[in-house]
Image 1: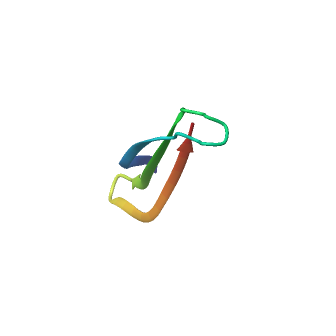
Image 2 (image 1 turned 90 degrees about the vertical axis):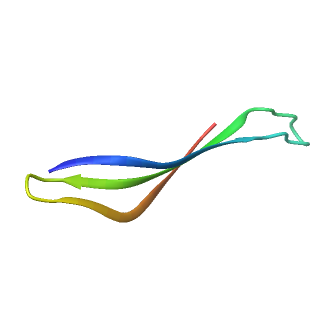
Length: 53
């Protein structure tokens, strides 16, 4: 079985922190699992959240 992840949404949030004055942006990504076999293609209900700076 082959496993892939479908990207549902990717959002970039700008951050202006008043305490540390950081201006780095935060990236949020939401992916959904897709399992493929020779007979069936299944898209699972579970959604995976990824956070990156």
